[in-house]
Amino acid sequence: MRAAAAAAAFILCLAAGLRRSAALKRRAELLGELVVMLKLFGIEIRCCAYPLDELCERAEGRFAELVRAAREHCPDIRSAWECACSQMRGSGYGAAETELMRELGKCLGTSDIAGQETLLALHGERLSALYEQAAADYAKKGKTFRSVGLLCGAGAAVLLI
Image 1 (cartoon, rainbow, N blue to C red):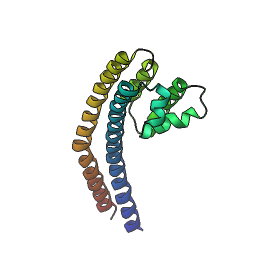
Image 2: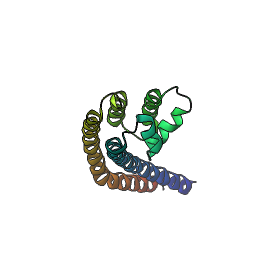
Image 3: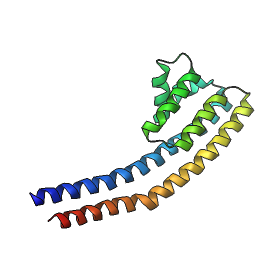
Image 4: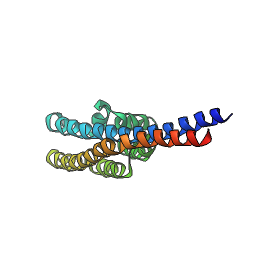
């Protein structure tokens, strides 16, 4: 009985550490996708002058998937973008990038090509800074979370045995 409880405590602690580490990694990956998406938006606006709905249809990544899914039940692309921003938190994104994307969705497509390129560059730089911070957090804290989960699990198992 004690061995089973010790094994369960070990597994639960290890799983908690792995989950926290995976959340940091997922956020960094998602931010990386957003940075790439905005760079591609800039290129497509400069070269082809695509409107926002066409940009979202052509885009790849989880945020673009959220926008396309929201597009099915929203009347226009702006409301679909807003709905996707509301769903971002449940998809692993943080508050800062959610607000940046919400702000971008309100302004993108409302000015000329040069204005949109400037807007994308500004938001791209801000997202790049968030991405670099998230990648550094994962590099520093990811291993720590895994190690602490392992050690807490081992400690709990020893105490229960």
